[in-house]
Structures are given as structure tokens and as C-alpha cells.
Image (cartoon, rainbow, N blue to C red; front, top):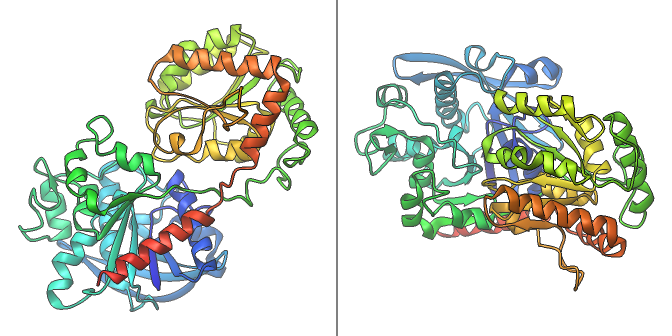
Length: 482
């Protein structure tokens, strides 16, 4: 079985979000269970600059895109035992950022999608049985296959699996621009095809024309068929429900392992977490300028500061959390208004609250290891990785029960000792606040219950092994359908 994973991100080469983590980890696991999976992504400047000596040039083609005829170079590099192909075009990808400006990004990834189909087989030395497509940046590929290849006898046997990582971002742009760049016939440039309310929608195209559609958690697969979570595509997804399923993401358990993590103050495992986490907590309190006391509950949030992540809920009750004796550390960047409000609060709540408006990978590891609670009150969360990483480090997630958070976090029952975290169902700031108070009370007053909770969290299997097998089974099912 030969699979080509088409992605705009791949960690650690080029990452802006969870898509990068998935593309970086899933292929490694699939290859270990016998799938010949390879990846293709743009040759961004940061990759070209760092890996020039390791990139093998395979050849080039000129890509037609409307009135444009554009150069496309194809390179290959094996990375973590996975063959990776790169689409090179200096005008589109020779920038310091992965994503630049929306209109230009639509054009860039229109080129990328047309280029991927043109170079399969030659000069790319690979002809896949399945294209595994991801998010809007590759959503038009199945429509392009229907328009430009299958009518002429090409790619008739090639299947497509389309994964939605976040339905909110759909790749929407003007009719004239997309019609010109993609050169699609009327039967595809229609409301039955790629148009949504009269304008092209890359995500809709992927849902309509792909052979199978997946999301990154089972709960999210159901949620997006409702009006609240469906982002205007819920009726379409309901009509396509026969081909939609959810496969939960995993995490890289080697990169996130408290027993070997080089970034944290003390290494520990499930048997030695008591002393190890205490050392990490004290070190984090010192580093963040907090009152140094391991008996104080310490909660952290590592997130993009955007409304999806429930930032408004936290801001609404943060003062009350601090007054209740909980320390809080926040790491992330995002909406300037959120950044300013957190910064302003941090300036006046020294010793209890520290805010770092940046992205710092090493610091995030120290926060996972040194905290007691991980805050994730998301309004919606297709999968979420942070809650699984935090549990791997024995830091208990406190989440809203939505999407992948609902699939991975089971509410703790003090009486039975079952559960691995805390969750609340409603988008309500005081539900969130009262749950933090309950969690802090268990931490302070019921150390045996807390120890059971940490053990439950740390013994969970958050690897890609189960999910990789589910993807392999799905690929086999798609191919068997003929």
C-alpha cells in the first residue's frame, strides 16, 4: 500500500499548529506497521536554508495555473526514516513565514495543489495508491483530479482520504480568482461541487469529492454535523455522513517523556513522580517569579490566545482563581486584546500570576512537568494535544467537554478513584471557576486521591500506535472498494 500525505506543515521542519504534529508523527508509525507512506509539502525558506546539503533535486516542471506558467522544482529528503518530497517555488514559498496573507496564501496553496498532481510519478519517484489530504490547503485536489485527470484516464484508481483538522478555516475566496487559477468546468464550479453560497470553498471541495473524510477525534466528527460546530457545512456533512469518521490523534511519546526530557529540572516516571514533579514545580515557581511553595496548586495554560481556546472564560474568573490561592502561568501569543489584558493582570498580580507572551518550546516542557493543573476551557477543540501531553507528565487537565477533549479526559470520581482529569460541559465561566476550586480542594485535602488521579493520567496510552492502525484499516477499506 502506497500513500502520499499532502500537508502544508510537518513538525519539526515547518509547524504552526496541530497539523504539523500529526504530519510529523503519524507517517513514522504507519511505516512501522507496513504502510509505504511518504509526505509532500512546500519547500519553505526555513527548510531550504537549514537542510540545503540534505535535499536531493529530482527534477522540475512548468505548472500551468490560469494565465500563469510557473516553475516547480521537486526535492526529496528522508527525515526520521520517512521520505519527504518538497515543492519548490521561490515566489510562493521563499518567505520567512509559513502563512503570510490570506489572499496570497490562497494563491500559494492553489499552486501547491496543482503542482503536487503534476509531479506525481515524474519527477517525483512515487505513484501512490492513496492521497491523504489535510485541511483547506489541499482540499481542492480531489476536485482537480475530477476536472483535469480522470476524464483523460489518469488517476482513475487513485483514492483520496481527506482529514479535517479544524473546520473553522475553509479556504474561501472569490469565484473569479479560483476559476481562473484552477480552470474548473461548470459542473465542478457549482453549488453541487466546490461552491458554497456562490464562492469557492476548498474545504467543501475536499468533503464532496474525497472518497473518505476523517476528523481528528470521534466526538468532533459528530459535532461538526450540528449547526453550532458545523461552520456552515453541517448540512453537507450530514448528507455525507456515510463517508465521515473520526480517528483520534496521538502525541509523540518520545518527544514528550518526563523520564528522558532534557528541558525539565528533574526526570521522573509513573513510579517516581512525587519527588520529580516537586523538584520541577519548585524550579518553575522560581523561574516564573512565583511564591515558592510546593503546597500551592499551580495551574498553567499553554495556548494560542484566541477565542476558540476559551480565553474569555479564563479572563472572566482569573482574579477569583488567584484569590482562591491558585498560582497561574500563561504561555502563548494571539489576539492583541487578549495579550494586553493578560499582560496588564500579570503586572499587578506578582507572585501569583506570570504571563509570557511568546512561544518557547523548552519552557512549555518545564510547564507541563512543573504544574499540577493544565487549563484548557476550549469552546471547541477538534482533538487537542496539550491535554494528552499534560497527562503524560502527570499534570491534570481541566477541560471543557468538547471534541477530542471529551474523548480523552474522563472526569475524576473521588469515591471510585476512576478518571484522569476534570471537565465541565457548558460554556460558562463560573462552571469553569467552581471546577478549579474543586480540583484545588482535592489537591490540598485529599493527597491519596490526587496521587490516584496522577497515576491514572500517567498510565494512559497517548501514542500514535492505535490511531495509526485505524488509519491503515481505513486505507485498506478504501482500496478494497475499488
